[in-house]
Structure formats: C-alpha cells, structure tokens
Length: 318
Image (cartoon, rainbow, N blue to C red; front, side):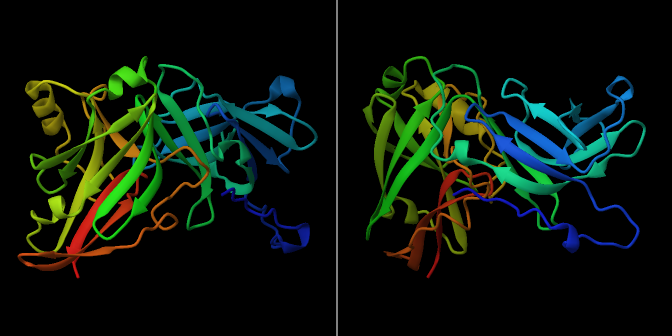
C-alpha cells in the first residue's frame, strides 16, 4: 500500500505575507535508503552554501542524537539530501527539519512520498542489520520518519485464524544459515505482564521460511481478568540457561508495542512485519477475534500488530 501526500497548488498556499513551510518529496529505495528533495527553497552560490536536513529522534534532547544530512543544489530552487542505507539510524520515530546556515531548524512538511520500492520488499542476502525507514505524515501534518534496525529479523507473513488456532508463516533474515538456525526452533509466546510465563510451539522450517500453529486454549488458561498480551518470538534451539537469560532480557517492555530487542538476539528474535510501506500496521492489518471459554468466563483472543509493528496476541473478556 503506497501512500503519498498531494502537493498543494500555488493557489492553496497561504498568502498572508509569511513564507509557507518548506516541503520535502521522499523517494525510498529497496536497500533502505531515502532521498529527500526540497522545492521552493532559494539556492545561493554553492560556494557559500551551508544547509542540512536534520533528523531528530523523538523524545531525545535537541542536538544530542541529531543526524545531519548535507543539502546540495539539485536544480533551480531545489535541494537534495540523501540518507544511505549504510548510515545506521536507531529504531524510533525521527522528526525531519531543514537547517539553513545559522537559522533555527524548521520543521518540514511532506510533499510526494514515492514508496513503491518498499512494497513486498525482499532484502538482499547479508548479515548486517536490516535497515527499514518509512517516511510518513504526522497527525499535525509534519514529515517524520519511522526507523527499524534489526538483525536478525523475522518477518511475519500470512496469518490465518480459525475457531481455535492462529496459524502463521514467517521468514528469517540476516543469519548465516537460516535452515540450520530453524532446525529445532520454536515460537515462544511470552506473557507481557509476567515475562517468566511462556508457552512454546514447534515450527516447521523450509529454508528461511517457517510456519507455526498456536492454540488459543493454551494461552487463555493464564487469564485472570482484564487484558493479557502475549508477545511472539522465534527462538533457536538452545540449552535451558540460554533460554532463561533470554526470558530475563525481555522484561520491562511496553504493553502496546515497546517489545524491545532481546539481549540474546541471535537466539531469540521478535516476530514483526516491517517489509512494506505501511508505517503503522495496527489499524490496517486487523484479524477477527475468537470466542474461547475459560474457567473464569468467556474471552476473546486475536492476533494484532503492536505500535512497533511486532506480532502479539490479545486476550480480553468477552
């Protein structure tokens, strides 16, 4: 699903004597890089040109984690900045600014977003962390960027729900021998409010691809009222000590998606969906809830994507 913001016509721009906020067109490439073009920005003599596109991590102190990308003339009244896939951008939401010379950075508004290369993206074979960056429009109409940096990465595929079971496909990326990694692997559902509580099911591997089936009946037995969330991880076959360390490292997560990365990421990887152009999966990819009877009453169980686009299962009273 490729989304784009329509550039306003000159007649639609305010004519109150104040300059309109600058806009940036964004073009994504299949490797994870982005190109930003800013139009209607005066371009002085290149010899005296000093400007940058500034990426600011939301929640961080201004200037502490900023990423500055040089802006270069790219035509009449048009400048360009490039964010290569090789530039590491930590996970999070980055607000986009333009800074000219000594001026205070100004927030950028979105122009046209060309995200076609992100649709059904198939990453190249590599062991380096997988970089995913998706530009989007905030609720205030500004341009921001959602970044993921994961290695290894497990991409969720087709998900099917019947009366009792969640069945899903996935693919493992950024490991040297995915078939060997998947041999004996399991999907571990971890109870969010108590990460020491887990339930595992085997996976069936086929090269880098795998499938698994998770019965809701095995999760609802822990329900004590309210809402339970079970986060889904793909786990390589490991000894008990490694599994215990992985469980401890996943504690302290955000219930709506701050699932975090395990400190033993090579052995346990969060299942998510980031290889497309949809920045927020939660309101777009929805699945039917199934009614399940427990000793405490009836509950509804359904898979969903968190705010970080990770896959979880929600259990709540009917």
